[in-house]
Length: 117
Image (cartoon, rainbow, N blue to C red):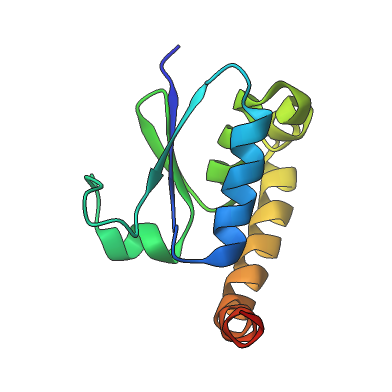
């Protein structure tokens, strides 16, 4: 099984915190994390698309949104049950709706984080 590749927005504080947690949980080194906000990162698809939505490549297949999160969860033993549950279409649909709601709030959260920091 190839290493899971996860692209993330390193310019977004919430994303950085979440990826830091995932790195700590990924004790087996099953995930390679790539910061898309870095100019040095090679992007197989449009960088703007990678910055707008969370993406991962699992077994050669590029996933986005909740499906990408589920792939990341499957690679981390403690989160694997949640990732496996997300293979069910209904569960994935619910997770995707939640992710889409988060994306609508993300600009406001970013502005709020800037005011705090």
